[in-house]
Amino acid sequence: MRYDGRVQIQRLTYGKARENTVSSICSAATLAVSAAALAVSTALLAQHACAADVSRGALLFQTCSACHSVLGDGIGPDINGIYGRKAATREGFKYSEAMKLSGIIWDEATLRAFIKKPQSVVKGTAMAFPGYEMPADVDDVIGYLKTLQ
Image 1 (cartoon, rainbow, N blue to C red):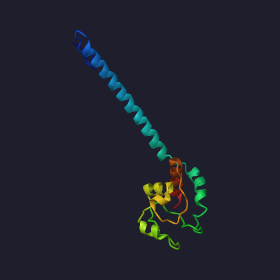
Image 2 (image 1 turned 120 degrees about the vertical axis):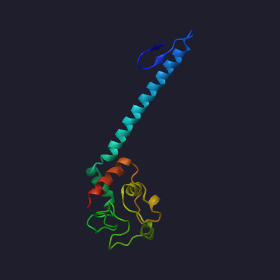
Image 3 (image 1 turned 30 degrees about the vertical axis):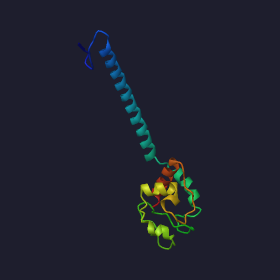
Image 4 (image 1 turned 90 degrees about the vertical axis):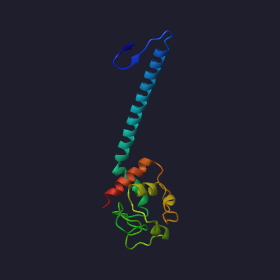
């Protein structure tokens, strides 16, 4: 029996213990490499999620500005200060019954879902926009909306 500081290796007549030990070492190495790759991928995804491009979000918002004005003079409700606000509470706008009853607070999760597919979040909303499919587009629009206070 020999101890090399990492793994105890036992030599038998047909080498079965050594084969099993080598196999275990290879499995452990594969698992370690897989875990490291997962950690790097997760870090890159988290970095992208946190790194919204606000100027790109402002450009994407131009589609929204067909109805929503930050000045309050659009055919849709003013979205200035929307982040953290309860849905259907802006004075002077006639909201759909579905939006009034939604109880939504416009936080990260609800904005993300609504910007992606409005009708799936509030069935019966008057908003005709089909949504942004790309997660990066949603991230950037949310980043822009957070600047509107």
